[in-house]
Image (cartoon, rainbow, N blue to C red; front, side):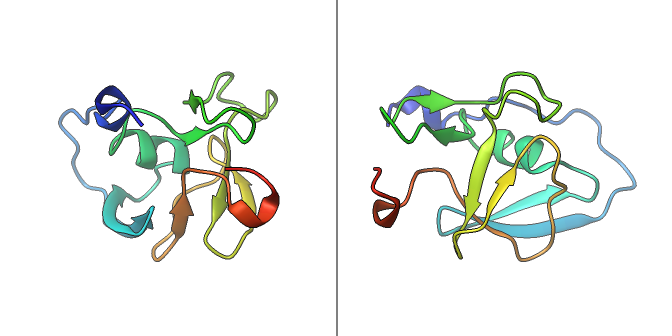
Length: 105
């Protein structure tokens, strides 16, 4: 993982009137705002959404409407979700890389 992939890809500007939502990203506490998609919540904290299962290359979503399949992420329990069309929820535990038990990573 490069230093560039750790720099946030998105920056919040003048947010008001939305409640904070605490979640966990790769084992670290993180905070989003109510109404954020998982994709937005993650990209505010790092410069990539996930690493591809095949090469480990960084990905950040593509179509932003759930069609291209580029935004798949996993919860710690193994559940897969589309980050661009799933809203962040309090207590969500997200992983940005493939799990070894899936035969990847």
